[in-house]
Length: 417
Image (cartoon, rainbow, N blue to C red; front, side, top):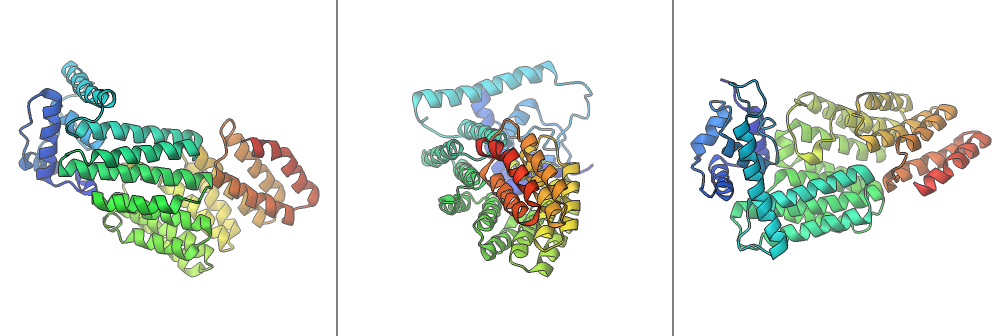
């Protein structure tokens, strides 16, 4: 009998105890069926141990509603069936979704509900997912920031409406996540004023939520913000703070990201040896990760491709342009096609690495690919900054006609993107 590691990781990451999760599931079952569930901490422990591999449908739906993940993603599997979802599952799923969606709709139409619970958390999570989809498509912009701040305000307001202690924590965590989304929008757009204030607020909310994953996310964003501002000592300190979080201490995935962020800050600070040491620790930590395991949405981007991309940045900054080019090619080789902005950003860094090796012709070709990759989509401010660095260095390093031709060729796309 094998333990359900995916479920155990999710519980530990979210800070659930067996009794608390059983209580929350019973409440969610009651909201959907009209009759509270009868789960106990013993039931949850059987799920963890693998003794129970496929809870009954009403329980699975409640668990999916609370976690935001499918039962399969949480490590559950029906060992008895090889067919698709049976009809009674589909019927009960529609019933459950109708009850939660109906509760959410009545909240929107009729004003604040007398009590706040799972349906409100689900509605806000759906809004947050929509903002992430918008970010994937357009990148950071003012409308996204405003929508995220509105979501944060609503989540913080709802926690005052007599919700249970656990629901209040989840709402605080959502408020922190919305505020972090607003911060990222500013960073990605290159509008750094106000981002620090958002991060201070997000860190406070994450503390109130007692959410170590959210705390880690905030420190990660602070390291990125400090690097964009040129405050490299703060970038390193923020990455080191991320390493001290509970989630980074127990998750090699999170630890790897924090080490990589520290490496970038140290490279900018001209501490070559420490930067490369941090890169090594990031690689060692990532090698311990089961990349097939479910993870929080905010860190879904991080894996071998992203670490190769960050390695390229570090190597280029410390003067290893050939190694930077190789790392960029490795990143592009394993980067999922859906990560278009990541591909464009890595391609821009590739162009810089090629230019730093004196291959201006190839660098111009790579730089031009950025506009092809991003065709039809505005260039985020963060990407414009890298292309600006490329253009300035091109003008200083390459033959004058080549630099002018590249600038003239892409000026229209650059200014209108």
